[in-house]
Length: 285
Image (cartoon, rainbow, N blue to C red; front, side, top):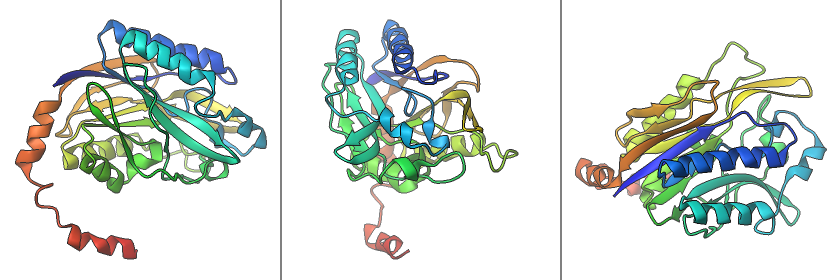
């Protein structure tokens, strides 16, 4: 099956939930005008990346699923535009907080929740203060056009995540992201490392990979992060099909023939030749 996928990036508006939602809706409309089947938005697109600093007030940004009106709003739009949409959000569940994701498909159906599995911690990325480790395990999501494997930002650095999603039947892996500069190492630019890691996942698993990353400088409590965008679409051989730059808002669109990548996985044989009996050792470390 040939499908159209799109990814996006934009500069979040600080403290304006509705304005950021409207930016996302604008991208949905642009994608729908190009007959896109699946659109990816960046991680926690509803506001600034608040994890750059520690502030208890930011827990007030968390929303509940499925009662928050954002979900029904996007459900209505996805149904109207016949588009599927993974949505990253800051979730409050009882007294717990998660970095979460749902997929709304082109019929408006809302999936179960995925919780981000790997929670980073470091200067400018204080996620362990805000988010619990995910309890859902890795998840795939069936849509009318494709089975999606979705994981969130730091998850994308772990080959185990990409492999498990592919073994679960993911036909595309999608990573909403928020990654940029390192405040304690201003000379470090991890952009190429980030891109190369996703290229490796695509090639090793013979599955297309799509990522969305935010752009712009965001400053909280004198901690500044420069998000480097470069939202990207990669094919099942690790070829970069489309990539954005570090500063422009917008979307990019590409056609993917899922039959070709499926047949290639069967032909190449590395899933056939796996040796799970030898992999238990990884659990000892």
